[in-house]
Structure formats: structure tokens, C-alpha cells
Length: 332
Image 1 (cartoon, rainbow, N blue to C red):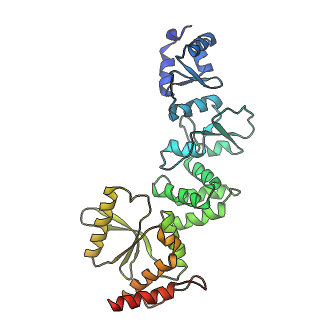
Image 2 (image 1 turned 90 degrees about the vertical axis):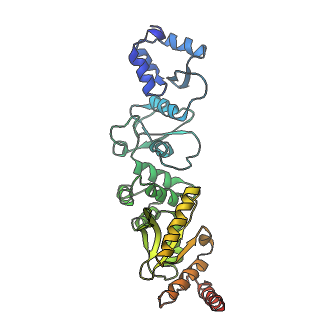
Image 3 (image 1 turned 45 degrees about the vertical axis):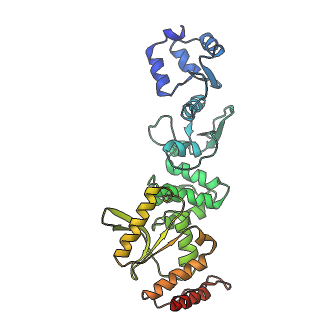
């Protein structure tokens, strides 16, 4: 049967697959291999993978290539890794446009250019419910990608960003890690997610908790404090509630646009009107956490904290910086 004689169901199938279709599907709707070859030569369709075509010429969008790659290896295949994260709509930099699929470990298939395959012994338990094309569960994809990123900082940022975007929770990721006992970086991810369960939402917040607060013996702050600024609800990164000190941590995420900066200023102004001083730190604290700890300690002591910060190392400058800050305050 010629292309235009194919039943309307074939057109609907191609629409659902964003233009992608397999040779087997075309044959099932009466389109012969000869018709496919003629249309390929004339440029009306193009072959993307072995036995898989798209029904248009020109550049192929990523979403269509996802369908085409799955058709090349399905039905026992599922989107995985960065492809799954991008498909879920997780905000991030997912590198190149390679399509990543997971398949059962026992399958033996021919690899094709532009598709990366991962064989999994627990394939069925990794795949989400009735989604098309099939996709591994979000928690599985996040942990799989985090386990093989080149830098540990990237792994930390990925799991925290996923939770901050409210795509999953630290508890769900920890439950998945219980099942993945041999996952690379498992101990690191467990440690980070346990802190995330206490309110840590970014790499900068984690750095503050570990390198500033814990390392220097500062009081424990409360994270993600819900408050009203008179116009709505805001969340403060952390607050030392016993002393009325607020600390805001401004990383790149969530503070780049004009609207976000206006919300930050409104939040700080509301804190000032409530007689709560606010300290604000950026990524500089990662490189000099001792100086940040000294600044926080100086304000805490002015607000009633009676202890002193603890040097994090023999060469830590927190106490000398604290003394310098005190001298400068008296001079003023």
C-alpha cells in the first residue's frame, strides 16, 4: 500500500510519537519497505536509527529523537540517566543530546550511534508506572547520574537541586539508596540527603552547615523558616531563633532575575522591621568559611550568645577575625 493509502491510525501514531515510527509499525499499517525506501530517497522521510524513521526532513527535535531511540530498542527499554531527568522537566545542564536508555541485563542488542545503553539486572523495579515511552523512576535517574558525575560537588548539587525543585524528597531518595547498596558515592549521598532532610536545599547551604556552623561550634540554626513579609509568605534560609538573627545564602539559583532580587530585598526589609538583623553570604563563604563564622559569631554574641566559636583547624582565623571585628565595632 502506498503512503497516502495507509489507514488514519498510522497518522495518529506518528502524531503521538512526534513524527517517529518504526518499520514494523509502518508495515502493520500497510506501508511497504519499498514505499519507505522511495520516500527516504526523495527526502520526504528520513531514517534516524536502524528500522526507525521520522516523517519529515530537516533537523530532528530532541523530543522526537527520544521516541525514535525508544522505538529502536523497545518495548523492553526505558529512558534513563540525563535523558530521564530532562524528560521529567528537571531544571539543569544535561550535557549533549545523546539519548540514554536502560534495558534488561540479559538483552543482547546492536548499539547505534547517538544512543547509550545501560544494562540493569533489576530493570522491572526501576521503571515508572504506565508512562510512554517507558522511563525509570525519577529517584533512580537522579541517583544514577549523581553516582557518575565527574565531581562530587556536582553530585551533591544534583540531589539537593532535585529536592529544592520539589520533584522528590530526601526521604524518597534515601529509601532508594537503601536498595542500591553498591552504588558509587553511596555514603556521600546518604550523608548529604540526611542533611537535606533537615532543611538543606543547596550546595551553598550545605557548605554553610558543615564549614561554618558545625566546624566552628556555632549554635544550630533552623532551616527554611516560614514567615510573612506583609505581602505574602517567604522562606528564610536559616534563623538563629533564640537570638533573632537571620542568615540568607545567595547562590546562583533563585537569585539571578529582577523579581528574585526584589523578593530578597522585601524579605530583608520585613526582617529589619521585625527587629531581626540579617546577614547575607554568597559563594565566598566556601573559600573563607572562617571569616563567615567570625561574622556570624560577632552578631550572635551581640544578641546574647555567651560562647565563643571553636577554631576548625590549628590555623583557623575565626578567633583573631572575631577580635578584629570587635575592635572595629568599638571604634565605630
